Image (cartoon, rainbow, N blue to C red):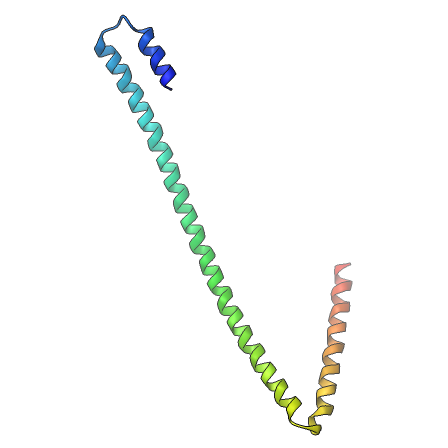
Length: 118
């Protein structure tokens, strides 16, 4: 840009100083407008980034509460399972049948999912 400015000033060497000042003023205003446009675009981009970061934080907070509820559910299940295993011989038959049932359900679900995928 300074090359354009230098050429325009030297190209008009014979003109009066006020004409040169007018050209410099026009060039200065054009560059100021260009800078203002760039600043506006950067400000818009920064606001978009801020909005996106807020949305992602809300999403992560929701996931955190979901994980906390699953953790509570699993903790309760483990406590109940531990109680069953420690309660003695009466519940061993029940424990074996529940374990076998869970294994059968797992294989059935695995079979259904593998058939649905093909």
